[in-house]
Length: 262
Image 1 (tube, rainbow, N blue to C red):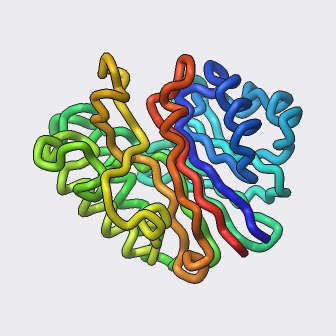
Image 2 (image 1 turned 45 degrees about the vertical axis):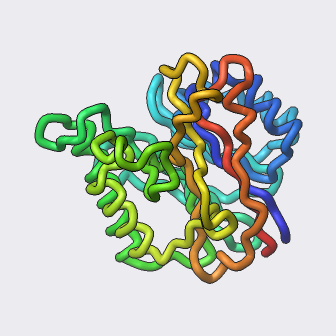
């Protein structure tokens, strides 16, 4: 059963409902994982998604913050959620497909601006969350699983516009990239995007602060698609829809895609 999956930090699903509909119409992924929905589940525009052909939804939400959702044209079974680091935030939801593949949709805390866990509680929470992701993998390596989401870390030198300048900037500090590497190794996860596109600068996020984000191109690859090793070889066709960053009233993230032949 081949299917295409996309992940997108939408930065308020109700504010950008029309952009979600546009993506579904123009790109037609079988599964779309959204982060930072900023909505209780009961307030999600589910009727709009159903009208677009995505009648299967699992989600976790909260008012004004966080929130994750999986929209699908394929049947989904709710596979639960994790509260890593005990934050009480809606940052993970899982769904099981008819072929037995489990999709995990994560939204890792951004971490604030100061990369000091003693002085910045948000950064401390981020490190605790990624440590929880590592410990979850160590507790039992996933099988037939796909992990997607805004992990809020750009792990490689070519995942940022300037490696040296960003070493002390939250999302690319060594403590974060090393911890994410530990989490990836613990779960045996394969970075599908970099499996398909092994070299070269690659970004999925551009700051709103840039007057001309496209010309400046100071991006970071914060959004990821990973797969457990037993199915990673079935992945192909990875891409980032950079154009979506230039849509009207866009999210500061662009959707990331991969196809699996399973």
